[in-house]
Each structure stands twice: as structure tokens, then as C-alpha cells.
Image (cartoon, rainbow, N blue to C red; front, side):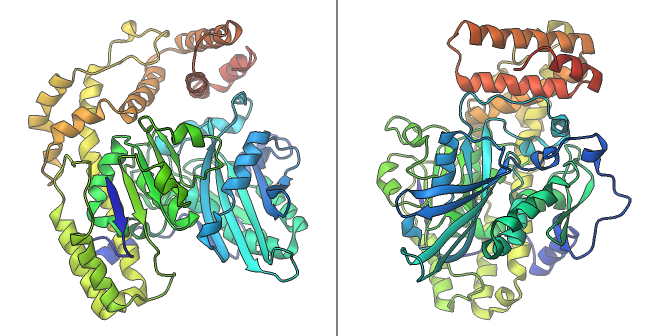
Length: 580
């Protein structure tokens, strides 16, 4: 499948524009809010209240801050790592260097923001000593930290400077974190990066000291986070919050998700299927910002499910996994965002490719005839696809989209007021959320009925349910299937059959079973499970058993989750039994 977006366009509405705007306004104030005031005097600093050491407060939010510059002899190079005691392997530094700069063909002048994701070096052990990690258990599954990956949040500046030999000032300020709080960290960078480029390292040190004084990232609590004279207000969602709430959208997602889907909006439902099924996808975009925003929009479109396969918002030919992901055999389950034209040939054998062309600069109003041409080019010039969707396209949302687009093209009023993008982003999130819930509810209901009795669960098994009887499940769809909550027709049974064989289903089942297991067993049984799993890890390491590193990392993650679900006194005892 290959999709090509010729120009910017907007997604559809499921109702009148006024209803959409009202829906956007009803969601309340953003979860991340910059104000000029100070935090409330009586707010408790939980990190300091537990007597944490210097930089423990910083480590709860960030691993480190890097400054990446361009050296005429070495190319990209890490100039500063702060705090100075932060540890990065040579491999990790190399990845950060190349991922922090746009490809030379991108032509990004001025300031550019984007993000990337990279794999931690093998051998880096997961620490269980950070007491703040126990907050992770209260997060929604798709906001939990992945111990095997880092996120990099980039603020890149490239401006002409005749005093430099290269003729340009090129530098990136990069926040490295395990937290997938995309919108939040981009907001932080907007506050500190422009001033840093003017005032250099003393300003960066002061900003890091502010972060170190932040309270712990407690889910469900409103936090006031001072940063260089400005206070940000944020509330981290919990696993008990209703999906689609303002806190979740503003913490992790783009403000205007519809801008990411507009070049291929008529096929957004098909893209939802591909992401749900863990199919390999590559996004070819003209800049890292468009690449990363589109990849993240794809990953978020199946929320509240977590996308368990790998995804790289921005991927380069210098990445340490380049050979692994560009092999000529069957492509792996991954979503890649790329900007280098070299990938057009290297990844031409991939079954699903999204090509995004140049979009209009922010704030520029497109010509009427360009908009109309774009509208009809989507209909007639999209090419041939190798993937046949299981579900029929939702014509109601498509038709509303077309009417809205023609209205904008002729009036320009909506574009100038910037209201349709916000309203349609709300509508699009709601559309994907309802689609995902309609799909997953029948499956969750059936899996819950198959959970074995407590006596039949063995600590030697990674999950109580290895497979589900698919034919029996298919029979239940006639009376309790998605048709009860969704108007979309199509081959739902075929979609379920494909999903049951996908990596997303395996991981979802494993995550759900682990939570149920810890809730239904005694503390003695849970401690016994942890000790046995630790022994297995030690045995695998000591005897050099043929176990994949990813499997070992996943087992350590499960041990972390189990320990963090126990009372603090038991956590302390298990921590003393040895590192995992």
C-alpha cells in the first residue's frame, strides 16, 4: 500500500461546526498551562518529603539534557550532558547525535521541534531503587514507561551566521526521558530553549535545578512545575480516568491531530486497521517535525490500547538499528518516520508506505483552487493499494469532511479563526476512540470469562492464557459484537482473526493477565513468584541460556510491576535479594 498526500486538508465532522466547537470548549482548560504565578504555598513536595537525594527529583522526569552541535571535522557531536554524572553509552550518544539534527535535505531554517525514540544499549540494567517508580502502576497502560527505550525531545535551531565557517549556527537542545509525555516536554522546551541559545550553559544549569525541585509525577494530582520564572500546571491521568479526557490529550498528544491525518484522511480508517494489527508502516515526510507528528498520531489512534510494537517517530540511516529494520526479508512490525530520500529505494519492498508532501507554512491561507484541487486529487489520484481493509469506510464522516473542506475553501473564515482545526481534532479523537472501544469491548468481555481459577495459575507461566478459542469467540460476536456500539459495517470477524495473530494482541493479553494475577493472589504467593523469576534470570545469565535480550528485558519489567504492587516493607525486602 502506498499513500500520497498532495497538500494539506482537514478531517471531517460528525455534526455541524458549532457542535464541534462546543465539544472542544467543553473539555475544559489544557492540562499543561503556563501562568505567571507561583505554585500554591501549601502544595506538598512529595519528593523532598521522602528525603530524596540531590538530582532524584530531576531523574523522576528526565534522564539527562544534551546539547548537540555541529563540528566541521566530526559532524554532529554532544557538547554538553547535564547533569554531568548522567550515564550514556557511546552507542546511545551516537544515536542522539544523528537523531537530534534534521537530514541535510530537509532545509529546516529557524526553530524546529520534533521527537525521536531509540533503544537503550544492551546491558543497561533496570533500577528498582528509585522509589518514584511505583507511580507507574497507576498510569494508563499506554503512558507507562518502556524500560528498553528512551524518548528524545528536540529543539533545533539553524540560522545564518557569517561569523562561522559553515555559514550557519546549528544546535539542538535535547531532553532525554523515559516518559512518553510528548506535548508536555515540547512545552518545556519552548520555555527554555530560546533563552538557552542566547545565555548558554548557566541558563541550562539553572533550568535543570528548577526541574530537580519539581514534585514527583504523581498520577491524578494537579502539579505546579516552576521553570525559569514560569509555572506550568499539569495533571497526569490515572488508569481510572475515562479515555479521551483533556488531561490525556494535552499531556501526550498533538493539539491538532487532524493536521497529521489530513493528507491521507480518506484512508484514516484503513490506517487505524494497520496500526491495530501491528503491520509494518513507513512515513516519508519532508521534515522531522512532520515525520514525528504523523508517527505519533498513528500510534495514538488506537488509544486506549497501547501500541506494543516498536515505533520510531524519526529514523535516520545512521541509526544503530538501520540494518535490522531495512533488511530485504519480511519487514518487522514497526512504524518508521523518515525524511531522507534514500529510504524511498531502500524501503520500496515495504507493503505500506505513506508519503506526505510539502504542507503550507503555519498561518498561511491556501489558495481556493489549490484546496479544491487537493479535495478532488484525493478522490482520483491515490494509486493502487496492496491492503484491502476489513471494514467499510465510514461515509458519514467522509461526507461531512468534504462539506467542511469546501466551506473552508470558499470562505477562509474558519481558517482565520483557527476553529475548525481544534474542533475537528476533538471529533477525530472521539471517532478513533469509539472505533477502538467498539472493537475491544467484545474481546475483553470474552477473555475475562476465560480466566482460570486461582489454583490453576502457575508462577512458572508468563501468562495464564496462551491462546483463546477463536471459533468460540467468533460465535459470540453475533449477539455481543461491535454492531451494538458502531454503525460501521464490514468483515469484523476477519479483522478479529487477524488481530488474534498480531503482536498487539499477545502483549495486551499479557499486560491484562499480570494485573489480574497480582490482584487475585496473596502476598506470599506474589513474593514466591518474584523470587522464582529472579532465580530464572540469574540462571539464564550464569549459564548463558539462549534467551533473547528483549525477552530478558520484558521479564525484568514484569518483576518491576509485581514488586511495585506490593506494600513498601515487602518492596524493601525484595530489593535486597539482588538486582534483576
